[in-house]
Image (cartoon, rainbow, N blue to C red; front, side, top):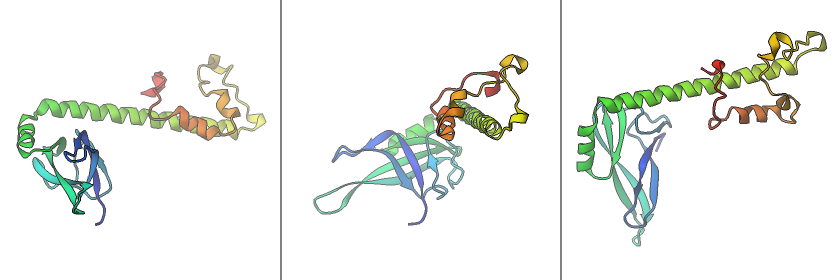
Amino acid sequence: MGMYDTIHLVPPVVCDRCGAAHTSTQTHLFSDCLLDWEPGMIIAGSATQTGILKEEIYCCNTDAGDYVRLPVWIVIWHGVFVGHETDIDKAHLRLNQTDRLDMLKWLENSQVEARQWKGRYQRLYRDMQEWLKQRDAKPEDDIDLKTKFGGIFNRFPEEILKDMDPLARIVERNAPDTPAPGGWFDS
């Protein structure tokens, strides 16, 4: 079987027989690197730059002991995973209706996501540096940022330093679903 990639299906593919909603499927159509693909992402390992690829989802065991195969048509436009359809005619229509404005929207979403990831990484890195600096500080090296420069650089919470598990608090503080504080240092 080897390695595979996962395609996230938005909206889910629903089985006509049992009603199960499939939100993803595994495929060997792309890079076989255990990557996850969502609509709007550039498919780096696809041999097809623009076209429609067929995949199948195996669902519900029938009385005969066989599985129902649900066809899924993967639409790729200029190397971008546009989405999927369960009907080949709808897949052709979707491919033909995709335009450069869709590409610009996907590019913008990708850049916003990259900036958010970079901001989370930078905040996590700063918090770890600050925690290590304060954890390893010697009494003779005591730099009181509360008084230096009016305390504007003291943004590391004291409750994290005093917590039983400061690393867990730092990770919670920088979780992906936590909004950025919005300071000038979060760009």
